[in-house]
Amino acid sequence: MSRGSILRVLRRVAVLVGGGALLAVGVAMIVLPGPAVVVIPAAIGVLAIEFEWARRWLRSIRATALRARHALLGNSESGPNRGA
Image (cartoon, rainbow, N blue to C red; front, side):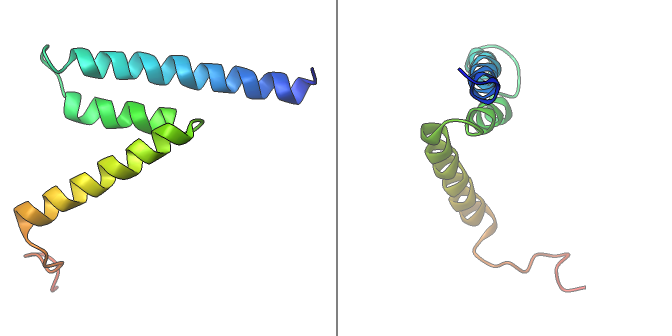
């Protein structure tokens, strides 16, 4: 195994462990006090660095957030501070 391939494997493992730990903390925050709505997408973002399945989830989360934003604020891009 070459040095480059070992570093790739180590990076992948580090992303998996760090993102997995962050995701576990975020899931725990669903029932415990804390910003689970922020931590879970951040964990998926970390995992998306190395994993295609996490990239797909992140695209889905972004699309859902955008739809929610449009539903709450309306489809207009011109807000109160946009016309200046």
